[in-house]
Length: 220
Image 1 (cartoon, rainbow, N blue to C red):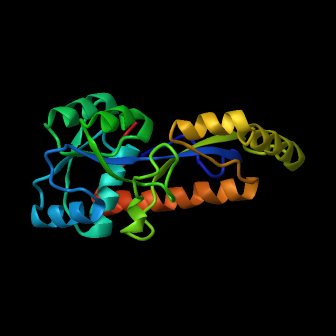
Image 2: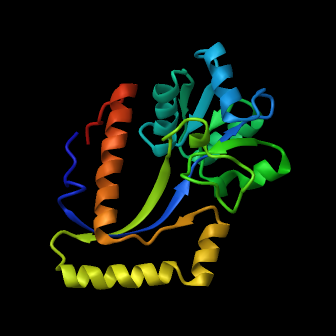
């Protein structure tokens, strides 16, 4: 409730490094092969499908709540102390759904222990090209974890421009870009103004999602 800084005012946005989409993974016992089938199943079983997260207020939690509010379904949040135990219980069948990052679960998916029915990126990813995005069925539904470079407020523009240029060059160096892409991330390296706009839009999106889910700020 009393955050000691302002995310927009107190930092200089220097560039978005990568965006990492969340996988939409289900236990194989759940009879849904794609996101449309899942939404239909969830509507038929309101409150009966549970999803694990890495804790209250995390992106894994909010992704499930955003899916609820966007599609009119009701899947139930089960918080864990980290995504690893949540995935373990998903593999065991104690929960039916989760939204971890693709690198966390790609091994389980390839072994058949989990089924990835979609992911939340803006477009399909090389790490799993056969897996559709959620927004192919639910237009505009995009959720990514953005990894950014920021500095303190007030960095002079020429210095910020120089840092941003070096960052973009490093991100798009072929070996670096390939390593990031192979891991399920999308290299970005956008401009200063684009990065600042991204931060503002993410704050607005998640503020609305939290309000719709009735999630209140915690006391420090």
